[in-house]
Amino acid sequence: MMSKNNRQIKLEHFHNLIVVAYADGRLEEIEQEFLSDKAEEYGISKEDIQYAFANVDDLQFQIPMNNVDREDQLSDVVFMTMVDGEVHDKEYEICLKIAEKLDLNKEYLDHIIELTKKLSS
Figure 1: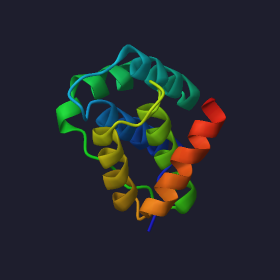
Figure 2: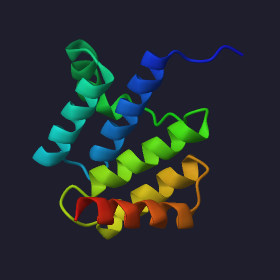
Figure 3: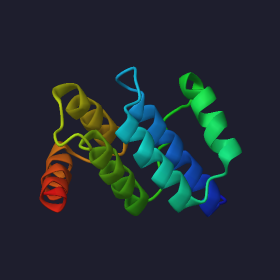
Figure 4: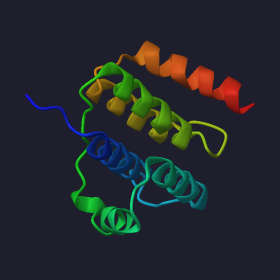
């Protein structure tokens, strides 16, 4: 089996973040800023960004192949849900579903949330 190239992995990660950002039906300005920063960090082209936002309803959540990428994605998802300072119930449910999809348990999710709270305070 051939491994995915780094660009493809970063693009899938970015798409996953967009899927999560839109999960509540709207995109907050602070979420948009976070996504812009991630796109820049990952070197994602403006065309790829515009395509992703234009086709958000068609984006599918992609599961990374290795644990480091899974943990990174969950950390980014948690960070994005906490940009307003707290994890709301609906956001927690989304994070929990994503953790399950990533084959990570609730205890790990709660650990990431606590770490993120400490880092952002």
